[in-house]
Length: 220
Ligand code: C5P
Image (tube, rainbow, N blue to C red; front, side):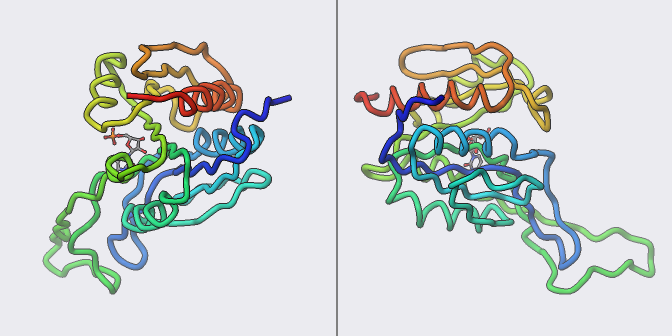
């Protein structure tokens, strides 16, 4: 049984990878499974929230009662989030958003060249969705994720301050991707709080409880 700590709140969540087009049949993506974001969507819904889940391509079923918006690219995810954010009380950015998209993506399938040369891809930087929502005037309470491979505490707290978010959740990237369990550390103005290794849904429930608490008290 989950206490209804988010009753009547609107929660917006991003999850999964993004997929950046090279040509009509090829994409660049990453190994995010979406499991953590989907678990948080389920936990937020159980806690009584109205949940909108903006999801990149995943193989996961939509959690019961969650309103899912499917996107592929970071640009599409950015557009969907910016149009939903104004109506949201809480924004939890869990997606592994690609840092770049292919600037010279082709509308037709790239052909193998007769001279044996590979095509040259050029990259452009994608918008930072979390930073853009965090910068909104009277926007939602923002929670970010930091998948780090080393120096978790230092990097995650630095990222929290750089992104300008009241809460940032750290995990160790190589352990978290596609796994069913996770070990989270929560960073906020109140300091760091380490959770034990837990199944992702249990970790999500703990996190949602903490977000409910911190988002209802004034934050810096
Ligand atoms: O800067 P970095 O990618 O490590 O930050 C991770 C956090 O920022 C995650 O919460 C992720 O969902 C979010 N993010 C985003 N848009 C991006 C890059 C990251 O929302 N373009």
